[in-house]
Image 1 (cartoon, rainbow, N blue to C red):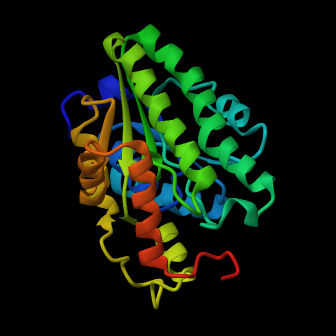
Image 2 (cartoon, rainbow, N blue to C red):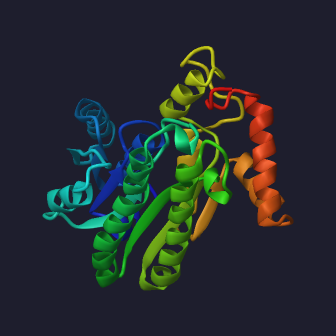
Length: 278
C-alpha cells in the first residue's frame, strides 16, 4: 500500500465511469489502498460484478450507483446517494464518444448529451465534493480527459471541445486547491486499450475482432499506474507515448498548423471513410 493513502484520500472515494476499462481498474486500485469506493456507471449488473470482485480481492466496502450521466439530474442523484459518507477522493473517468461521426450527422441533442456528461456533471461534482476536502485539508480529484482536447479534429467536434473544457477546468481547479491539501490531477489519455475503444475501432473496420488490441494502444493498467505515481504532481499528466509526443510537437507549431496537421493525419488514417456519405 502507498503510505498514508487512506489517511489522505479516505475513507470513501467515488469512481464515476467504473463499469469497465480504466475506471474499473482505478476503483480497484483505490480499494487495494484501503479506501472504500462508490462505483458509478449506467449498467447496474456490470457494476455489481465489478463491486463483487473488488470486495473479494481487497476487502474494501463498495456501493454501486447506476446513473445515466446524460440525465439532467445525474449529479444530484450522485450527491444525494453519498450524503451519508465522507468522500476523500473523486475520480471522473466517464465521457467517451461512442459515435465518432461528423458534427452535422447527428441531432444537436447528441452533442448536448456529451456536454452534460463530460462537463456539467463533472463540474457539479467537483464543486460539491471539493468544499469538504478543503475544509478537512486533504483529498484528491482525478479527471480524465483525452488527446482530443489538444486541438480540434473532424468527427470529434463536440467531444474534443468537452475534453478541452475538462483539461482547462482541471488545471484551474489545481491552481486554486493544490495549496489547500487537495491533490488535483488531469490525465490526458491517448490510445488506451479499453472495451470502449475496441468496440469503436471494430465498428470503424480497424479491428477484425473485439479480442484484438488496437495498434499503438497502451494498457489500462499502465494508465492507472501512471496516475497513482503522479497524484501529487498535477495539474496535467499525459499518458501514453502518442500524447506525450503530441505535447512536444505542438509546442513548436501554431494552433492553425496543429489543426491542419490533425486533419491531414485523419485523412491518411481513415482515407475516404469519414462517415459523411463519401
